[in-house]
Amino acid sequence: MDNLKCPSFFKCRGKEKVTASSENFHIDENDENQERGNWSKKSDYLLSMVGYAVGLGNVWRFPYLTYNNGGGAFLIPYAIMLALAGLPLFFLECSLGQFASLGPVSVWNILPLFQGVGITMVLISIFVTIYYNVIIAYSLYYMFASFQSELPWKNCSYWADQYCSRSPIVTHCDVSTQLGTFIHVNKSWVDFNNFTCINGTEVYQPGQLPSEQYWNKVALRRSSGMDETGEIVWYLALCLLLAWLIVGAALLKGIKSSGKVVYFTALFPYVVLLILLLRGATLEGASKGISYYIGAQSNFTKLMEAEVWKDAATQIFYSLSVAWGGLVALSSYNKFNNNCFSDAIVVCLTNCLTSVFAGFAIFSILGHMAHISGQEVSQVVKSGFDLAFIAYPEALAQLPGGPFWSILFFFMLLTLGLDSQFASIETITTTIQDLFPKVMKKMRIPITLGCCLVLFLLGLVCVTQAGIYWVNLIDHFCAGWGILIAAILEIVGIIWIYGGNRFIEDIEMMIGAKRWIFWLWWRACWFVITPILLIAIFIWSLVKFNKPTYGGIPDWGVAIGWCLIIFCIIWIPIMAIIKIIQAKGNIIQRIVSCCRPASNWGPYLERHRGERYKDMVDPKKEIDHEIPTVSSSVKPE
Image (tube, rainbow, N blue to C red; front, side, top):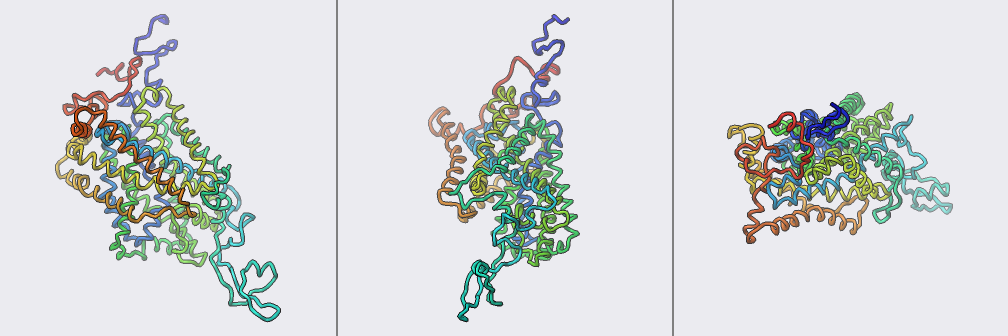
């Protein structure tokens, strides 16, 4: 028997038969789509989506926005914007990716004229991925630094200067000379010459917290500006390398491996938030902090201010990660008949409730910090980097067992960041998968690790002594207007050009027919409300534009920022022109043809196409005819 030839659809290794699925470890024999693979379990997908949507912004931005925009009153515009803008876009992208089983670029077979929108999404994800892993590197550094008997930023140490203090410091005062006259001098002169300040003449200024000076002088070794690049901060570079190694290891098998990792990285932050909330609630002053956050300080008159509604819409838009390409990429691995509607509801509600829950944990600790420092909560509350790496570390340093709480907090930031990073890299690899399926099938590991290596090298500029300026610059430009432009064109293209009713018919092929009343809300949002809201946010952003203010970024830095965003969005008109040139007929006929779905638009697998798509061209780019799939060899259709 050993001398018998194996059947043509098997490759032989001794007596062992190896199918295509066993060679391509990112595909399982139970997968519906044997070309691209599917999620192993529904829970893998849901946790990956929750991890992608729930990120650092839920912890370090939403609580501050709530406090700053009327406390509990802010939840009203927040919920309204979720219903009007966030959820409709989220549902649209999930449905789009699942229907075609294609990533953010190839899915634009639906409207070839707009294929540049998908490229813009991927390019922006690449830029954001570069600096986002730097933030993860910061979290790794602080987590490692917390493994000490006393947190290194608890007190002013050898790295501090004369301005390091938790209480106001004297900068100038009057002194009496030998001639009996009085002179006004700075405090350093007084100390150097052994004079004594005359009581009542001291001039005070707020001191810089030890955690603030530690962040700037030790963690970042921050230079005076972008003009002074300095050297690579070696320990941040090592932390960045470790962050990329973690990401690469989690994605070696694509969704098959990342879908397992998220069981920890997506759920662990909730455990930490609960622990921090329980600990914070027992601290003196916690109730005052929570009151400032959402309780007694609720100010419903704030709802009359346009800025509050703009903040709510912006936070929803960015928090749910719509228009980044990741939702389309992750959903493309769903089985065709998965209920993407219920998924969208679950993920969106989980994301928003997480934001509210995180606020309680954050403000209970900040309330205690305000209490022990004798300040108002408004004086200690921060957002973004100032909350994560200055205010919160300062508060944790004052707690008994501070190192333990610090390790927990920064490990939580690490896991929050990793989830989003997994999805962003999966967006890139899915795009490569769609464009070069045969190459990706054979070289998934080298390509995935190669992507991580290139992005690591590009990110080294962000761990120089001027790195924090680059992080803020990329965040300010790439994570702003480009995403808004992509979102506006996405909904206009699919709903207004491809056809909203036609798209609803596509969705019903997956989740089953629904009564007209079901679609009434979605039609109202998709056709009118959501695009108007997005356009309003975009115009508001243009009118209110301010260049990045962190550390005084120079004009040439702002010019680089504009170049980055132009590089991302320029592909929209470029691809439109290319598609028109490739079309046939006069200019009007070419444009019209590019506004129609490509011949290969439709469900990826033939079994799902039905009568509506029975004549579509197979969208698969390359098929390995030497190794048919398990389904074709075991269960012929």
